[in-house]
Length: 283
Image (tube, rainbow, N blue to C red; front, side):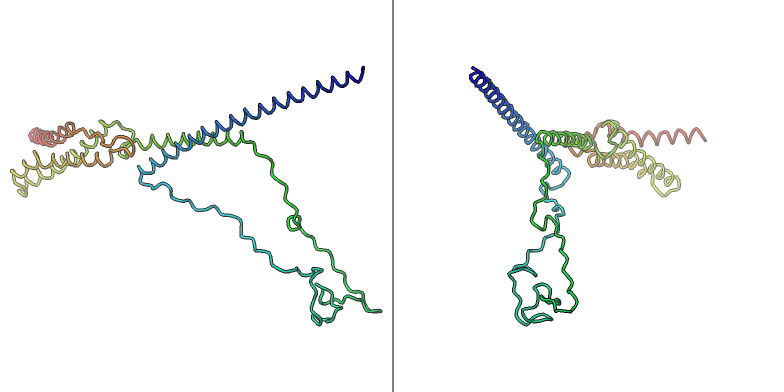
């Protein structure tokens, strides 16, 4: 009766072990499927990041696909020398070679005879040479196993960091080089007013030159009403077109031509009128 109970207990133990093994195999298979899905998702994400970086490289004028210099590797290992080593039992010296000559010369010990002379000093014995485990052919201890889930989590964190830096680069690339923190309208007003101010200074110089007779009245009015305002407008237009364009985003920068025309063609005549009014008031 005890034998049947022991058999039943053993059968139950084997069944529980089989169920545990099946559950462990199912859990391992599910873990592998999860890892494969995560690897595929990360690969798709890294591919999209590479394409986006290629687009940014084309935008800023960098050709993608330039091979990086190879990392420094270990120094080259000299190939083993063919033939038996010195002191090998199978290497027999030629007769008559070595200081002692004849068959009495010990292999690898050319200056010490193989047989001690009676009554003479005892020859020095060779000490054993220490040989490293690697040189003796013993394999080095293997590194610990790498957890795929841990490595995948680290790769996902690096991908998140790359996404963050890519977003910062895109935000910087969407800002123009000229007054990047200003709005487009404020930038255009500042540029057109700057060129109009230069034109006003030139107009004042021409007014002083006209008072001294160096510039005629017709030439003064022509430059004041048409030449200087047109030059201011064209200069502001070119500056906004060159430095007001973001590296990524809008192909045509906002230049506000109507606003620029009004600012440039009204600033010089109004400045001249103000100059005349101030001159008459002071007189």
